[in-house]
Length: 215
Image (cartoon, rainbow, N blue to C red):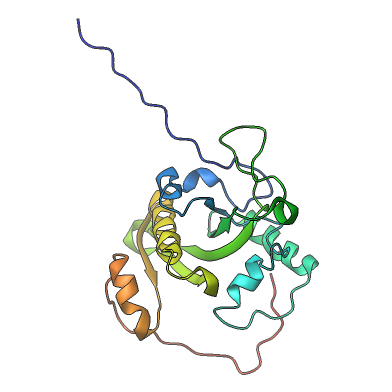
């Protein structure tokens, strides 16, 4: 008699799909959660991540990259809603440190044992993969990694590596035939360790007085 195949249950994401998250958290490989420091989680951007918690937020985290500017809650929500309506193109993720006092962040877990409530900890890293749809390569898709940010006090924990690994995995799962990025010369060794190769030269053209951003 042939042995009955044993089906191992697929590990569950610590987050459930909901309107507060930018995209379905099931796109984030569960195995990558295990590579994070204890108490850290990686998840899709949330509609409440502009709120400052433990002196940090998604927008404050981005300030390690460049000028973010003054963005009202209304403006943030409008942009978040636009991205969510196009969440087959925009995949922004954050790493959240849940190791914060209860007085600052409340309970870190929900009533369901394996679920984690987003927006209860401190945002410490972020990144985006933007999916471009092409005509070449038989209507192929390319992932563009943008805005990789890790808080200054979180260096040395391999959070940047985990962000990159996650964005690459998302790009692969949604069907991209390649994932690319631009970086400074000093960051080339890091991205080579992440599996990237030198390809071409980055060029840029900046508008002196750009018009107001439009959705």
